[in-house]
Length: 134
Image (cartoon, one colour):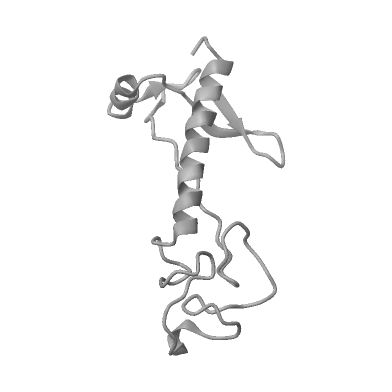
C-alpha cells in the first residue's frame, strides 16, 4: 500500500495505491465492497489506476507539450486557419498522414500510447519489486 502526495505541497492525497501482482486478486478487489479506512468506520471502494494520457497542444496540435505561441489548423496543419472554415483535405501535423491532427488514427499518437502503457506496466512492476511485502 502506497499513499500518494501532492507534488507541490508534499501533503498526502486522499488516495492510497494498492498494487497487485496477479490479475485475479485485483479483479476480485475491484468488485468487493472495498476496505475499511483506519481509525474510521468508512469503507472505500477500490478503483482501477487511470491510464497515462498523451499530452496534446491545442494551439499547434503537436503531441508532447501543452502550449505554444502559434496556432495551427487541426485539419490541414496550416497556421492561422480555423477548422470550421478549412476547405483543405485532412493532414496530420504529427505523422503527416491523411487524418486530422486530433485523430486517434495518428501513428505518432499510437506510438506514444503504446510507450505510455509499457511505462505504466514497468512502473507498476518496479513498485512491486521495490516493496516486496505487498
